[in-house]
Length: 93
Image (cartoon, rainbow, N blue to C red; front, side, top):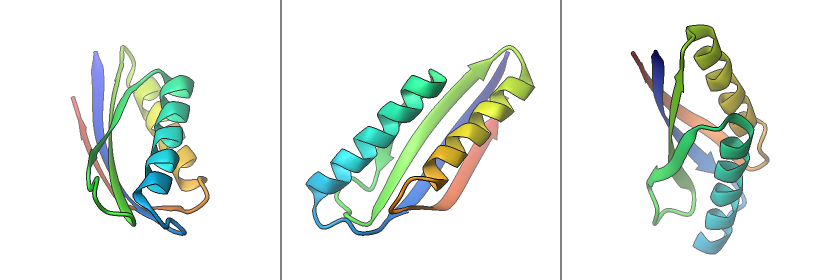
């Protein structure tokens, strides 16, 4: 069994309120959860309009599947308008 635990620190642009941020982050989380069937949530920076931190856990019997899922998640986040990845922390077992 192969596991990857990721933490994405992302910068948000064009957000004027926490309500807008919450809407953007919830949509992003739902899209990733639906497409990849992973465990994902907002971890920290809840009171900041310009920053968010998202945590993801991926489990599979094959390492190449875990790597492809991580690449797909990263791609979705990078291609979301108004979002820039500032830092990615990854642990794997």
